[in-house]
Image 1 (cartoon, rainbow, N blue to C red):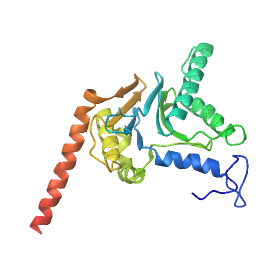
Image 2 (tube, rainbow, N blue to C red):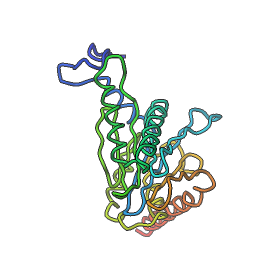
Image 3 (cartoon, one colour):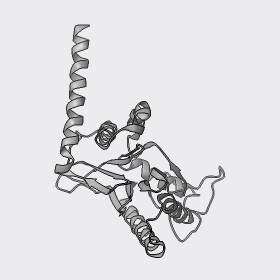
Image 4 (cartoon, one colour):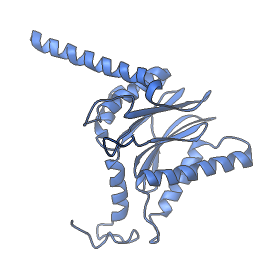
Length: 253
C-alpha cells in the first residue's frame, strides 16, 4: 500500500498544507454506514443503518442517548464514538448538577468539537475516527448538528453522512421544504425513505435499521425492531407501489 512520508505524525503538514491523519479519520466517517438526520419545528429525527460483521453476528448499535433531551447517531469507528458519548454524558450531567438545568445542545457540541480539535494538534494522540449527528431539544428550539474529526461542526435542517450517503442527501434536498411543519410519523417516514436508498446489500428491515427522535415535550427515544416495524413496512410498501406504477406506465408506452 502506498504510504506518504507525511502521515506518520498528526502534527506534520504535507507540502500541500494537509494533515493526512485527519483526512484518514474523515475517510473513516465516509466508510461507516449511513446516518440520516431531519428536523421540523417540533421534532428532530435520526435514522441509521446497522451493519453486521457476519451472518451470525448481531447488528452494530449506531444511536446513543446522551441525556433526556440529546442523542447522537454515529458513522465511523464505534469504539471512538463510545468514548465521545461517555464524555458528552459526563458534561451533560455536570451541567445539570451545577446549574440545575439541562445543558444546551449547542454548548455540548462546542465542547465536543473542541475536544476533537485538540486531538489534531498533538503528536501523542490520533484524531477520533468518527463523525456524529447530534439532535437536541432545548429552550432555543430543535437542533441538528454534525461534528467532524477535524473539530468543525455545523447546524443543519437535514443532513446525511456515511457510506452511499449521496443518495440520502439527494432525497432530503428534494423534500427539504416540506420538513418544517411535518408531524413525527411523517418525519420518520422521510428519514427511513432517505436511508433506504443507501442500502446496497439487501432491503430495509426493522432489524437492520434504527430510528431515534426528540422533542421539547418528549424525551430522546430510540425505536427498534417491533416498535419500528410499522414505519418500515409503510416505507417498503410505498416504494413497491411506486415501482409497480412506474413499470405499468412503461408497459403502456
